[in-house]
Length: 256
Image (cartoon, rainbow, N blue to C red; front, side, top):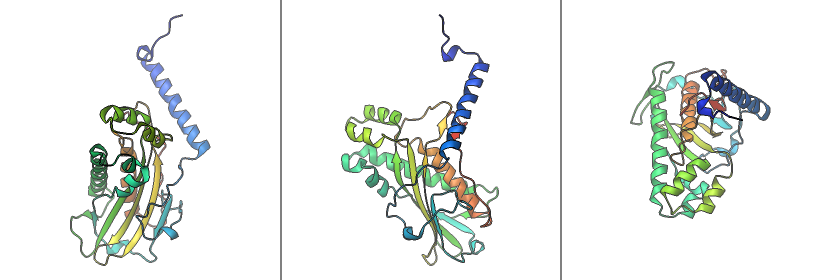
């Protein structure tokens, strides 16, 4: 019997297959819950002991808001360089591969990508009244972020092991034993007083894609989560405290 390969299937068959895939992903998400399990506290945040889930407002695992904060008292936001020190400790990459420059560079690239994503999100004037600044001062919020966990995909590890023979194969396999995911922690501070006004922590699994063209670096799958977090933070900063901000979908229609 002759079988057609996927590349030989007509367009209608591709569309039906894509629809089935998305329906299956949606069904799995409904049955299992869209939100993945939260990450452990990294030590980056100050008030971690009083943080809790608030799904009526926030799309994050845990939050803390200083009582009686008035957002209208602030007009500017300063996005500081992103911390990855807790990431290197939490994943075990640093301990298993001391002095590995490839990992140091990858962590720096992830930090730069995350800072840029949040700056670009707040620079979008649509439904956003805050202006991005590079200096602290009156009426200015400081956004401090830390990527605290990253579980790479097996595809990324395969590519990484070819590019970097010094990576411990056993350690790499252990880190990638679960579903690819990323965890973030963040806080908003009054840059004039140094007072912490808001904290959040969240962890997201990699979104399901129709075609996965990523996996070229160990953090490529984190792009979707970072961009979603940036958009969510902009929405939270510009909406009333009684408005619910939705979580992201467990899959994306983007093919890359």
